[in-house]
Length: 146
Image (cartoon, rainbow, N blue to C red; front, side, top):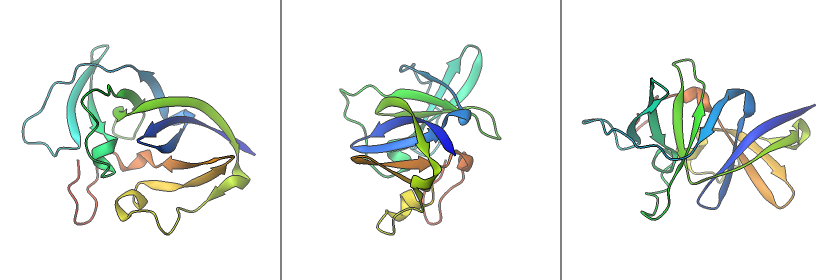
């Protein structure tokens, strides 16, 4: 059995989200900042009249801030609480993988990432981390949440 993933990059790490959870991928949109929210929430975007929270995945996964010269891409995902925009460095392709390549998250994976990664697919020449989008904005233990 195979599955399809929408892929993206954060720094040099390769991630995937099941395509059925992705509503759309759009270029950078102006974000309206919201006071008194954790720094992982960059603000709100207007998506054709719908207000959508924009979460910076670099900050959520403790990668540090994106260089000022790098414009993020919005990956809008469907969650139980409605759509959320995930800000990523760059978008990849839709990749179809065999379920046999799936493995649990590597033990060396940072604890902040482990809570948000369902597992990995070992692909030729790279490892695709499967992002769990069900977290919406639940805080991590001893960490700042959304």
